[in-house]
Amino acid sequence: MTQQNDNGNTEPSPEPNDTRELPSRRELREALARENALAAQRERDETLRLQAAQYSREAERVEAPADDSELTATGTWSPEPVADEPSVVPPVDKNYRVAGRKGYVPSVEPARLADEAHPLDDVFADLTPKEGPDTVTAKPRSRAPKNPHAKRKTKRVVISLVVTAALLGALVWGGSVLWSSFGERISDLFGWNQEVIDYEGEGHGQVTVTIVAGDTGATIGQTLATNGVVKTAEAFVAEVSITKPEPSFFPGTYQLKQEMSAAAALTALQDPANKIEMKAVIPEGTQMSQIFATLEAVTGIPNADFVAAAADPTLYGVPATAPSLEGWLFPATYELSDTDTATTIIQKLVDRTIQSLDAAGVPEAERENVLIIASIIQREARHTDDFYKVSRVIQNRLDQGIKLGMDSTVKYGLSDDASSVWSSDAQLTDDNPWNTYVHTGLPIGPISNPGDLAIDAAMNPTPGDWLFFVTVNQDTGETLFSTTNAEHEELVAQAKQWCSDNPDNPAC
Image (cartoon, rainbow, N blue to C red):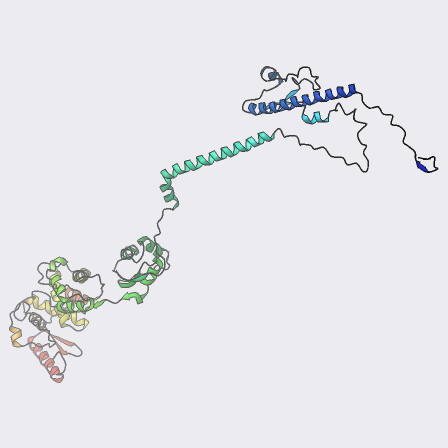
């Protein structure tokens, strides 16, 4: 609105006077008093709230009252109002409620008090700027009400953690006690204490191991373990048991390595290239002195050791009537080892002889005599049929009391190793216990070491009436038999003629 002044200019018209009345002094004092009372009341409420919180924390350690009837007797309380000051809050005696079963909290909460009308609100209402597009209104700060169950949840979590820790501690303690008492048994039960029983790999170094006839997988495993080839015999036995087809083992001495796995050791024993050849071949009819020489050459054991070991034949199960081990050292092929001694080798040969005697059905009391006859047969006969015929000649002459007259016995008694079949007059008349030209009956002992064929022939002579025999051809071994001395002399002349025709033959 405009108006014109005295100068004729236009200017804004003045606003009309504000008709609103300002509050009087009395009204201001009353409003201020109400404000102070309200502030005091809020302070008391805050104090009560803090006390209630404290009480609630203390009440958590005891059981809360079951209902309000018990509150009157046991826990109801109310604050005393401040003297001479008006109370704008209702009495709190019955306006305090039980939160859950834990403690007391005021029913009039600070949030409600904040929403109540302020005594000066009416006084200053007209002075408050009106909201408009340029008005900035500050939002009141608000605080989320506290969750009355938060402390309970926290307590439950703490209790759960404590209980869990206690249980874990008890388990650890109990486990340690049980382990100290039963740990060894538990370990044995689950195989935790089992020692490694096998080596790994192909091994190292060198070691010789001997397998003898009759050794089983368990025996061989023990031998390997004793010699440091495998870690345990059990490992080797287990390896043998799972190997298909079932492995075979052959007597002999083998070059192996130390600390081999059971599988590697088994493979090595099956490989002929690892077998050390320590083989002694003893032909039938070989004499004891020749056998000892052969054994020395094969084993490296001195001949004197064999002679000394053979001094007492009874040590090997030979009858005391035997003058020596001659005849008791069975001719065969033997696999020997570096662990053998003169004694162990001799025992092997004697055992093999006893085995042959038993197989031929020789009574134990007749063993020595059978070996004497068999030893002569072995030296005199050349062909299988002749073995049984020579046996018959010996038996017929013994039965008739005729001296055997065998040149082989004469030469043995004289230690004559010459290959000639002929004997001199001096030799034929030499008085030694083996000279069957001088002594009737069998010589004192065997003259060689016979084999199975000679032993069987001694026990089973071919039926016949022969009393003489002569080998008429030293190359072919042809031997002719006769019953009279005249026939015998003719055969002797034939044999001499052959030698005259073959002077280079060693037998002549």
